[in-house]
Image (cartoon, rainbow, N blue to C red):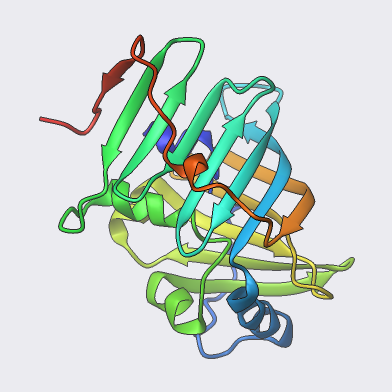
Amino acid sequence: MKLALIHVGSVMFLMAATRTPAAELDAATAGWLAAQTNVQTWSAEFVQTRKLKSLTKPLTATGHVWFAAPNRFRWELGQPPQTIAVRAPEEMLILYPKLKRVERFPLAKQETGAWRDALALLEAGFPRSRSELSARYDIISQTTSNEVSRLVLQPKSAGARRMMRQIEIDFDPRDYSLRGTELEFADGSTLRNDFQNTNLNPKLDESMFTPPIPPDYKVVEPLGP
């Protein structure tokens, strides 16, 4: 699924630690969750690192991400952007400017399935409450070292786990700012985003999340009939 390969866009390395019940949060994780209620918008530059078993060296790229609560986001990968992923109110769009192509994923409320579970993982950096976190994930581990707290989660949904084994969220325990996310996929590959130059609650134009589709772009729906 291309959505999972782009971002988030969106967080892991496999750990054999014993699961921690959702109620048993350490002080850093509890503080980080409490701080999420203050996040209305957020933006950052990022370095993305993709590790594949078939490649001896990881692939790296840079980009920019914007987030608006509760679940809208825009990822631009490459400079100038080679891939743009946007969650609009009713659909997910992935644009490829060089190819003049856009992939459309409808977000009808009644739709379910592994791809929607995977989409939810892209919002893992900003859960709004402890109950929201525990509803979607099992906590694998919580650690703090070298001024970075690391929270490792496993999706509760079997469909999501078929795509992504687990998610890692790294944050600063002093101000609870997001440092990085990492996804570990079912094939053992990983996708990591390290954030820098973050901006909390910037003013964002709504048009960022409803990009116009140029008339010369080919529109496809990969999940269509």
